[in-house]
Image 1 (cartoon, rainbow, N blue to C red):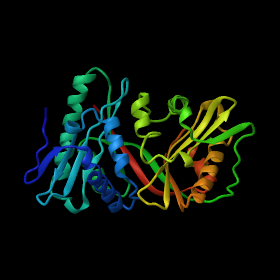
Image 2: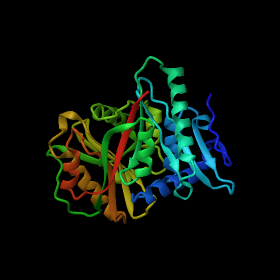
Image 3: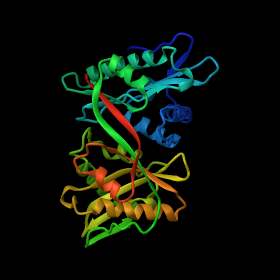
Image 4: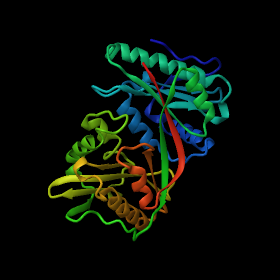
Length: 316
């Protein structure tokens, strides 16, 4: 097994107590690129344990001589039948230009290949990395290692407010999230996202670990829309590092109910609930080329592009 070494630095695997430091690194990178530093430790820890097979091996942290976290590399394992290995990580802006990023990324690629060879050597997997569009240093690194641009994404922001004129379709019943609907919601989500770019079906427990059972999940700001007894659409919302913001992590509409204004109506409801809870803004991320026309839906209820990101891919 390839090991990450960086001369002059201490390298070790991830522990749950590292969530705060890793989150701070992510936020520092985002802030330096002009994005929103909204990551929180509970979210970081939940995602690591849901998507990484062995955090002590597949997450490597690089500590400077003074004990600061200078860089990190994460290698995920796709769910059963999946195809995409995400490789989050990077270098704290205070430590760039010292070769840490190249060493970490080279290790991530080596470890990803080892996982692929051990689990599904005959499967066609893709490696994926992402960066704020302003982070030219990261993009040059990815391109140097043979990655090419695959997709663009928007982060969009709207003022939390009541009275947004976007009613849900007639006959639709909307409720705040209730745990009794967790399993049905999971099934609805897997169906709704089956035709989205990059979709990978996850099992129930890992998925709930970073959604409905996450410490940051806000059931009071989440919504489920029913048509009769069937879930037609939903929104799942989370706390952000900025107390003035709420983060909409998942917006889903099942295919039979698309193009009828359901997502806009649910977002209008969430914007009002967020305002009443004391939030000033709500933000979300969206595929710039979403086949559902999501960008237009979000603009209709007041969302505007705040930042842009790019996803790179390389066949493994």
